[in-house]
Amino acid sequence: WMNFFVIVGQIIMWMVLLMFYFSLFKFIFLIIGSPIFAYLSEKTESILTGKDFPFSLKQLLKDAGRAIRITLRNVLWQSLYMLSLFILSFFPVLGWITPLIGLLIECYYFGFSMLDYSSERNKLSAAQSISLIGRHKGLAIGNGLVFYGMHLLPVIGWLLAPSYAVVAATLSLHEARNKKVIF
Image 1: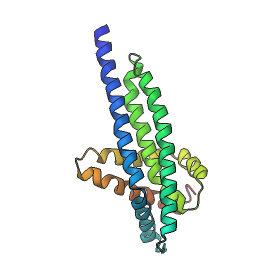
Image 2 (image 1 turned 120 degrees about the horizontal axis):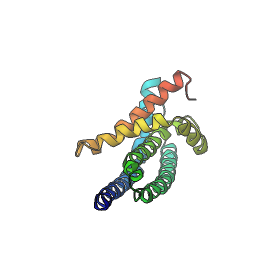
Image 3 (image 1 turned 90 degrees about the horizontal axis):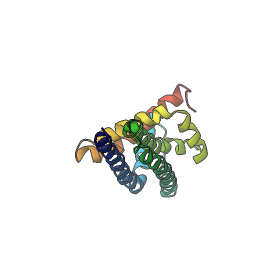
Image 4 (image 1 turned 180 degrees about the vertical axis):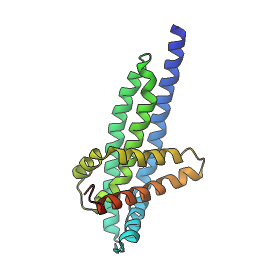
């Protein structure tokens, strides 16, 4: 039995580490692509509302800078949670659920990054955005789950996932704002 627990523990530990490395790669991609994602979110809302957001390099750089700060904050928090899960994965039986918890944590932070583009455009401070998204974790996890799932499609999923997630986040926040559920 001890051998069984050690092997299962090693597999769980390997899965948690693999998810962590995979998420770091995606966060780097989110940082590099933040100007494009900010612009895409703005254009999506422009189409939805008919409101024109004139292009401003200064505003785009401001949006991208905020996205980078939020993404770095999310990397830090996710890393702390994943380290905790890594330690938890050493415990038999209890450690077996760590990949599922790790997946939900990753999805939350990826969805959070995508939802923040709309929060910034609605003039919410970073603290207000953190509070808002923290109160609506299901929305962030759902958005992040689709983002994460699309990465399972080789190449095309990797290219389309961030764009799809930004558009979906903008659409969901627009709908929630119209129903006065969120803002």
